[in-house]
Structures are given as structure tokens and as C-alpha cells.
Image (cartoon, rainbow over all chains, first blue to last red; front, top):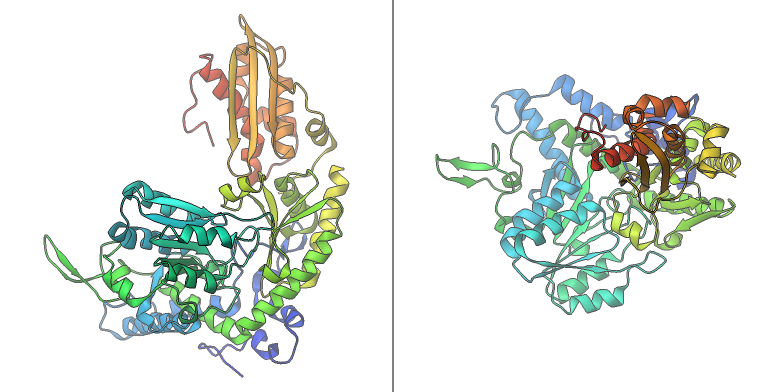
Length: 428
Length: 133
């Protein structure tokens, strides 16, 4: 039986081998203390994991143990606890590297989140390699975080942005992608999975086609790495960004992965401590990868927490995670379709991750979210999901969104459906 | 904090009072709540120191649209000076239910649009950042 670093054996580890994935979720829930709290006097039903996931004891304890026993600044002290802290943080980097099958841990840059990773590439790589008239290809599915940094780069450099459109099922028009590739873009940046529609894009195929056209690819895996097995070498992706807090880890830390030759050739993004080798009054030289891109004291406890989250997901197995989410999403799609007046957006369960955006009659999604919260204790997202242009393309001001993770059980969906019926009673 | 949807709120939402627009408004403003895409426009007709007509148009959640309808009823028949005095407490009193912090922007959208319209028409001094939440 696998045991995590702090010796904590989780319920997930005890049951992962014996139970079916959907059954196991009921056991997995016991690892998440927040899932036993109440809201408005009712048990919390948390269906907003696409915004941020909840945290298991293993992650919380890894961080509190670090603060209780080991905290000191890293890469500086020559005393025992500083060396231990450094070793723990660097061990987390190795865990992340293995988790996404990076060739070397120096290709794993700690950032604050996905957004910072994308901005790092847009500034450091973009300023050096993009000039007036160059084309950057994005898709209509992008979150603001994979859109606005490229808008800023285009404003700085005079580059052009083009977008792969979606069809009415929320799938990318790959025929138009091919046409855009014929215009020889310098960079293609797209999401592995839409946070609004749940669409899982054919990343491997799209990356191969981009490379054939001479473009580099940045993959936004904020919704990918937490939910799908990801292998950066098999994908042959050039840059890849994700956030810890959507994959059971703490907020405040994320990852930028890059191909080594690209990262080596890029100038620093931010200046400060840790990222330097030598510093003079008027010029300095840079540290090696990955620290060249990690100016200032890093989020040490958060890196260690992320390492514990990776251990936890490895113990479940990412194939199991995907299977469980497909099962729960299929169940949810069936149950939601039976609610009168409910409209679901996006593709079928086969091409969809654990995200369902919907509207109910003409009830505003914010009213729906308030009613679900107060009447049945269900937490969902309502609004534009940080994807305003996509919502406009779909002709929507806002949708309600339920999203699932390893701890979501069919009973959660049943409570959601009860809440939707209550909303219908109140409004119709 | 609970926020129930009382019958009178739903009534204002379904049957908004003073809905529409004025051909030649003396004061006009519109805005949207980027959080949820709520939209709201308010027109006022002013004669002397009296507000003689009010119309609003919008779309959005029950809280934002009911609050706008209730606000329009408060404006009717008031002097400009009295309308300038309308504030957050008046809107919250009219709604009569506790509004959760995340929904306050919905509740105050129409109030913000009203005061922007009055300021644009030179009927009150522009709001400072402190006045907007």
C-alpha cells in the first residue's frame, strides 16, 4: 500500500484498488474535512471544483507539518532546517516533473498560478520572439488568462491574434484551425479543456499540426492536469501551465513547464533574489534553470502542499480520476436533462470533462446560484466564468456551472436536481 | 446570511413598474454589472425642481431588476433634491431581505445608474470612488 511522505495513509489509498471509481468517491470524501461542514444548516454540496478544488488532510497536514517543524528560507541558509526546507521544496518539484513526465525537474518553474505562467511566456518569450505582423493563434474557448496576456503582447509588438471558432456544440472547428496554420503563426496557445463548456480539445493532434506549420504551442492545462493523465513528452508541447489549487493543492502556486532549450534562451521575467548568479551595480548574470524564473522567496509551504497533492492524485491514479469524472458527468447529464426547461451547453460526455454549464428557463443564473445555496446548500458558479467573448459567441450573458472532482458523488447531483426543482417552484 | 425571494420581490421582477424609456430624457445613464452581465438604463424627466417621469430598462437577475423597479417607485413624484438623497439604505429597506455580500452589486446597480445619470445632467456632483462600493 502506498504511503505518502508524512506517513499518512489515506482512505483513498485504502479503497482505490478494491472499489469501483464511483463507489470510491464516497470514501475519498472522508479525506476532505470541509466536505463535512454545513451551509445554511444543510450539508455542503460542493460543485465548483473547476473554480477551485477542496483540499485533503494529506495536503493540509504536509503544509502545517512543514511550518511546525521545518520552516526557514530556502537556498540561503547553511543550517539544518534551511537545508531541510530546500530539500522538501525541491522534492516537490521532482514530484511535479514526474507527474507530467517532464524529462528534467529544472523544466518545472514555480509560479503563482496558471495566469502567471502564461504571462511569463508572453513577456519573456514573446517580447524576444514576436514582432509586428506576426500571427498568434488562440481559440474561442480561452479563459481570460489565456487571452489578455496575448492581447497585451500584441499591443506591445504589433502582432495579430486570430481565433479558432467553436461550433454550436462547443467543439473547435479544426478545419479553420488548419486554414489559420497555413498563415504560419509563430505561436498557438489553447486550453486543454474549456472551463465553461467542458470541451476536451484534441491537444496532441493540434500540437502536431502546429509544429508541422512551424509554430510553438502553449497549452493551458489549468483544467487539464487536475483531471486527465498528462504526459508532456508524448504531447511534445513547448510550454504548459497549470495551477495547484485546482488539483487538491494550495492556492498561490502554479507551474510553468517548458522545453529546456526554449527556457534557456529566454531572458528573466522578474528580477530579484534567487534568480541571479552574480550581481553588480549596473548589471547581473542569471541563475540556472529553474531559479532564473523564480525571483524572490518562493511559496515554500505551497510547493510542499502541491507535492502532497501530487502524491494523493498518484495514489488514486489519474486514469481512475478521469473514469470517475466521466461516470459522474454522464450521470449528471442524464439527471439534468430530465429537469423541465433546463438547457445544457457544450459537447456530450465523451468529449467533455467534469463541467456542465446550463440555464434553467429564464431564471438568471445568479438567482439560481443563490437559491441553490440557501435552499439545499449547493455551491455552483454563476456568471461568465472569465470567458466573456465565448459567452458572447454563445449568445449568453451568464450560465450556471456545476463542476465535479474526485470527491463528487451521485448524491451531490441528486441534491442539485432537488434544488433546481425548488427554483422552478419559486420562479414559475 | 439568508436571502429569500419574497413574493413582492418576484412581483417587481415579473411586472416591473415604470419599465421603458423616455423620448427626450433630461437625465440618462446606463451601466452593466460585469460580474453577471446585468444591464440597466434609467431615464428621468425633470421640470423645475420636480422629477416628473422615470423609466428604466434592463435585464438581469431578480435582485437587480426588482431593486430598479422599486427605486423607480421611490423616484416618482419626488423633488430632484429628494432623489439626489436616495441611498443604499433606501434600496435595502425596500428589498426588505438580507442581501448576501456577493449580491450587493446586483442590489445597488440601479442606484449607481441613477446617480450617474443625475451627475451627467449636472443635477448632483459626481460620485467619488468611495461612493461606489
